Image (tube, rainbow, N blue to C red; front, side):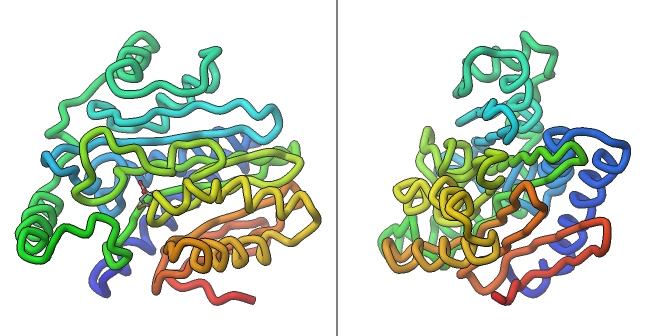
Length: 291
Ligand code: ASP
């Protein structure tokens, strides 16, 4: 995250936490809170989710999202959608209204239309900053050999976890994926247990970063299992980042929350924007120092 983007990221995560908090304070479920928080970040051009996402090799926005409820293990996911302004809303409808868990591409968009979600044009999701970023990247890559997975490329996926007054937790993750990805490439973000997971008996988890290593390690579930085994979310989050780096030289970040309200936030990148709001305090930052 470049210096000149820090303030926009801080404001973005602050707005998202506030939207989630509004739902929780009126007694709403964690599932609604994270949906609203993620919608705010999808609509915010700062992040790699919804409008303003990284572009794929063909210059198109292709989005993935997952939402999961810890009380019931119900989940809804969409992959490779190109005409949904807020993929997390359709993911939520899949969770609530479909016997299936996952829809991709045109099938997901057909499901959305059938359930009252309007489609948008792909151009509506593309912003000038990303057109320029892709152009620069492709120009540079043509000279140096195209390292699609270079850890130095920034990652800006969004995610949220929440605990409600009934003691239920939930998690959601939404992304435009990686810059210059091949059309049809699906990352970790929308895969259950990789970029997102929630179980009241373990933890709600959302991850960001270089997706291929994260999915090979099924990292969200790996982390939730460590919490279920009795470890603190703070420790599990840090361990997940160590595991990602040591095992596959992966880079990313993670947020973890258990049903007791204990929080873990960690990243092995220089920065990751995060916000955390509880009854007692509100904190935001772009660096989380491990405890
Ligand atoms: N994890 C996402 C992906 O690989 C990218 C990101 O977190 O920014 O699709």
